Length: 307
Image (cartoon, rainbow, N blue to C red):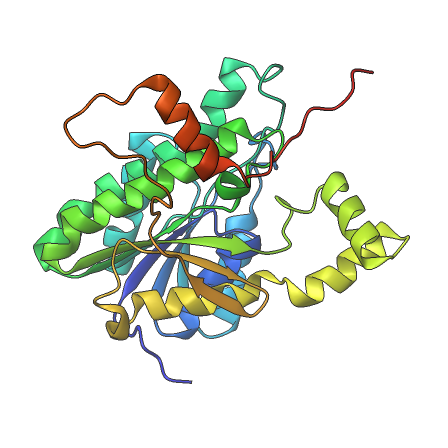
């Protein structure tokens, strides 16, 4: 295997487990020295553990170079400390992979402001904090790769994930702006929407739905089958591409990745217009025209009889 990233230093946030750990290993196997950042929190952001150390040990066993960091991306101080670890212990920073996050799922009317804020802090603010910390270095050296992690949750509108979906779609907008701001300095910024079976995604509800779709009664058996085609390792090849010289002109773009499939999203576009340039359109006329444009749309959540 060609080592495309020799001499590069990478940070992967949330790299103790799942997709982040797969990213860290892939980068290391391509020659990059890796800061494995992870405070080791639970799925809801509470607690702590030594999962970063476990990932570092695995990378070293495989012949790579890695160091652990346990700071939180949710604060500017934490993000700066992560970058400081890369510079002081590994000699610089060339690649930033924003992957850290956790979930606190509830319907919008039962979600507390604190639950909304906590998820937005670790995902959206977390991406901003680390990008802000690496940008001056990458600008000065005129080379850098930033890969952000979005989600299909914002496109699909996952039930009970107002906080998560809001943050993940915010990351898409951030990616487009950062790519334009830093592109002239030789720094690219792209985002992926990964599909993988991890502790974040494999909830009881998800496993139940997968079991039904597969016609498998045992949820554990369904998980085993699903994992075979949705392992986090399937996500990381796109990361290596985006970090490579071949991707120097790929900037401010979003990719769908999972199960051995890689897709490039088109930019959003308007599919129907009602136009009268320089004129105020009468509301009745607008309604008639909009009915023609939207008439074939299907309500994603149709009204149900009251129980």
